[in-house]
Structures are given as C-alpha cells and as structure tokens.
Image 1 (spheres, rainbow, N blue to C red):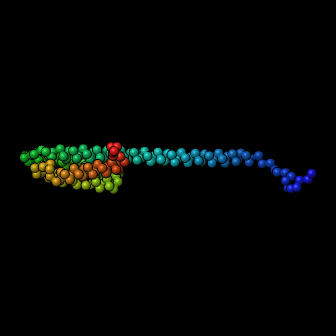
Image 2: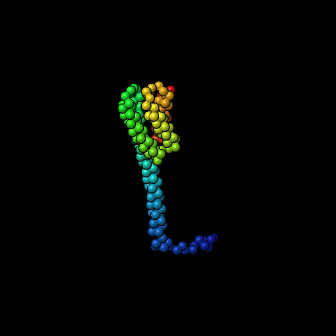
Image 3: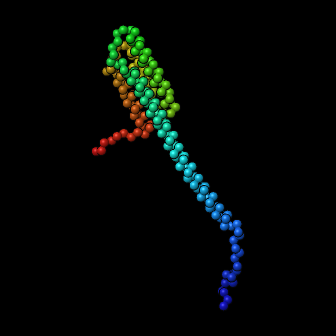
Length: 172
C-alpha cells in the first residue's frame, strides 16, 4: 500500500554532533545568569537593610548625645546662684553643653530627615534661649523651660519616626 502523503517518507537528517551540547550549554548559561541575578538582588537588599540599620544607629547615638548635652543644660535649673563667679561657671557649663549639642545637630544635618533636622534646630534654639537666661535667677516654670521640654519631646518623636520605632499601643 502506498502512503497517501508522499512527503511523510522523507528522511530527516540527524542533529549535528555539536547541537545537543550547544543547547545544553545555552540552558546552563541561562540558569547561571538567573542564579547570579537572584543572588545580586538578594545581596543588594541585604546591603540596603544593613545600611539603613547603620544610619538608624547613627541617628540614635546622635540623639543620645544631644540628650546628654540637654541634661547638662537643664541640670542647673533649680540652682539659685547669687555669687557672680558661680553664675559665670554655670553659664560656661551651659555654653559648653550648647556647643556640644550644636555639633550633634550638625551631624544630623548630614544623616537626618528634614523633619528630624527641623526638630533638632528647634531644640537647639530653645536650649540657647535657656542658656542665655542663666544670668537671671532660674525659674523652672518659665515659659522658656516649658518650650524647651516641648521641643525635646517633639525631637524624640521625630527620632522615633526617623528610625522607624513603633509606639507601644495597648490592646483595647
């Protein structure tokens, strides 16, 4: 019996000897490229996460140093000094603490967010006002101290927002 399709009996030439290794090599290269890209992407994410942690640590350390300087400034708030020499010593201690705070605020200008920088400058300004009032008798109830405390709290909130610290919310 004769086949109804005469071309079906046509012989197919075999694949050249190098065809199978080339196809296998192509798949091997494609797999290696995909693995390389996946590892590179994973490493980039890991590096970005580590960089963020380092910046967060720098912001936190800068906040702690600013808080130390602020404690030095507010340490004298209840001390009434009548001797002029004691007042000068107190003022010099406050001026030194304010200079230390300014250095840390300058650091935040490099690594901080705009909101954080703004709050740091506000705290620095309020601290400067308090130090400038030290030639008078200190009254902790003065509006300048209340403004300083408010600026400190706002600065703390900005730091928490900057380093992504979530506030504890009790379950309701």
